[in-house]
Length: 559
Image 1 (cartoon, helix red, strand yellow):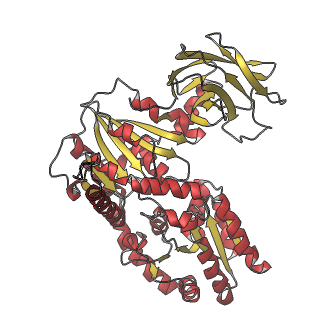
Image 2 (tube, rainbow, N blue to C red):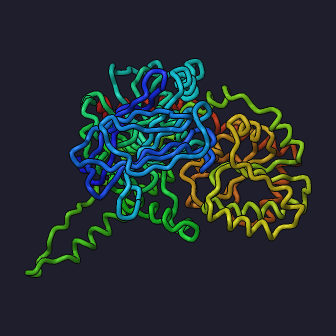
Image 3 (cartoon, rainbow, N blue to C red):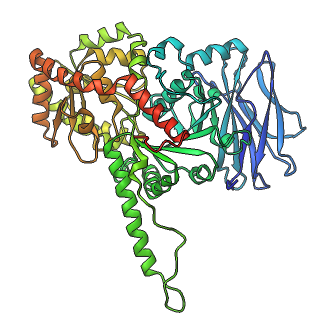
């Protein structure tokens, strides 16, 4: 193992108090400079201090590597007892009495530095009040068999006991990469393939069904002949080289990386992570096979490898030893093998999922009653250019005072302040017709698509753009920006309407025409419907699993 920093492996992903009230932790690389904290929050409505039961700090004996703890409630207050007789060095307990209303409970296992309290590692364990609560939660996470059984690629030969380990750095709800990983997991499970999810950071409600990546890196029970990794790459990952060193067949799925320059003003740390991710992109060439989400992303990958090789050549030529002769650098050129790169869209069973999602009719009616809805869906980060949408909407209201702008998705904190500044420049009437819908359910999202007259995205950077595909599925005409750094035009092809510049007036006129002319609207939607045929669940799922099994069987004719 190359992992040098401290980490922990939890032997139980969850516990239920009616079955078991204890759990075990294996600590690795711990030393006198670190300590352990067990922190707790309820998964539902966590808040400090009102819904924060408490935390407990333990100093670890360097000779202790495997520890066990028991969870208990004393007079409604949470308590952790060390089975190994470790003393509690420090603790904090809420004044609120807890017991019944905090389940399921997230137990955070945190390793910190003594010198500055810096978190060097964190993972979680979920505690349920009883086994029935766990089963109910698992049912929510696992797809019912009947949702996708009609899309099963039964013509494929599935090897027995095949293990697929799906790896991603961040597994978050309402995030395109996390959702794609979940679709992969669901599809493979329905094929009879043993699939497991591994993430570094994970939403609490998914952790019972998702391992930490270090659990995978320390697992000695996986069969080399029967295991495949699918590693999702979209940002710098400290565990990439550890994964590369594992002796299993490996597939990298490259989702693209946001241009650091578009983020730097609002989030220098995130921009640096993206830059580092691009700098280390060449490393995924060491995988057996590479999937990408679009032709655009494939070009980004190929250009990055070429740039890396050119930089390496210059470095090699410039370095000399003491005698004046050339020396060999540690790094070597990367061979670009385009035959092992395949475009696999990051959607596999989305049609089936949406067909089995109940629309929130009341939410949709309320939205429609407000006016002609112009919809945006996606994370509101700087590269999404929400300020350009505001400019278009400003012009749209001049010719269609009945228009409503609905912005759906989470928002970046610093960028939110900038957008607030932009919105403050608008009139009160304009402000009243802009809806920020950051926390809505999938049922409400379906209703929002169905209630919309036009879908719009003016993003400068898209590896694929799943919301465009979703808008097509709901027969909403689409307006998108045509720009070399986005795959929006590749996804739409000859469908939808593409804006070649940021002329807010002309874009607003196009949006209004789509809102007011049923004939024009139906024409554009008909083009989109034809394009949508290329993204049927059956076609996408078979393509994905066929490629996966091609790597497993070392099929030379994988394309």
